[in-house]
Amino acid sequence: MRIAVLDDYQQVAESLADWSSLGAQVEFFAQSFSDRAALVDRAQRFDVIVAMRERTPFPANVFPLLPQLRLLVTTGMRNPAIDLEAAREQNVVVCGTPSPGHATAELAMALMLALARGLVSESASVASGGWQVTVGTDLHGAVLGVVGLGRLGAHVARLGQAFGMDVVAWSENLTRDVAAEHGAALVEKNELFRRSDFVSIHLKLSERTRGLVGGAELSAMKRTAYLVNTSRGPIVDERALLAAVRSGTIAGAALDVFDVEPLPPDHPFRTEPGIIATPHIGYVTRQTYEVFYPAAVEDIAAWAAGSPIRVLNP
Image (cartoon, one colour):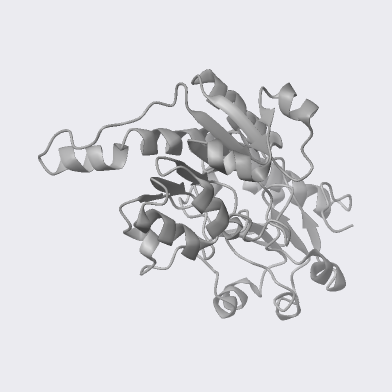
């Protein structure tokens, strides 16, 4: 059995799980394989592939080009970058792993603090020999608008309350009672964008949520308000957001997710002063990886024994 562990950007996968217990040949790849030809060239000789979240897409047209592949393990229990039906048609079992989730909520709060206190500008000033250059704003007493009050959104709501923020929330099927359970007030979508000092997005990407935050929503926000997206890039219209930041329609934004990842070298988000961009590190913590990789080994062992677990395409 040959196993490929993809997208090991930090080159830590080998040390965080007992791969030797599988009695197989395991290779670790640190580079990105977003290009289909490069993926097929490297992956076609493997029986098992372990993918980190959505870093490498597996659309329908890839599976016929990987005739040896029999098991694809993704970290997390949901990966829209994998065509599950196409995998099934090629007799490829797709399995997932548990996902703690709290790390992304913590990053969302970190990004809010960075925006509120001008941390990027202040740090750059000190590094260049300068001193104070901005006047910050408080989280305490500010209105936090949470778009999507599921597991992650609810965690962010609780963290916001710990900072003394007033939390409002909206999603298409959210009820007043559920919002209240998490200390949030249910409001209409437009009201959330109008009232919030910080808007944090926590929705799954779907046809319903793609482009959900566009020019109209951004125009409804206060000129002093900030947008944070640690969910999925296409939920926010990138062109509309860039225009809103450059025109001063909103005070700024912090993004951990993008339409195309890795973010192209010439993308304006890399250099726009009003935008803090991080490289999709929401789940990238040692504690999360210590769940992902051992669970991937469990998936492979169970599949090899003929009893696959956590199957996503039964």
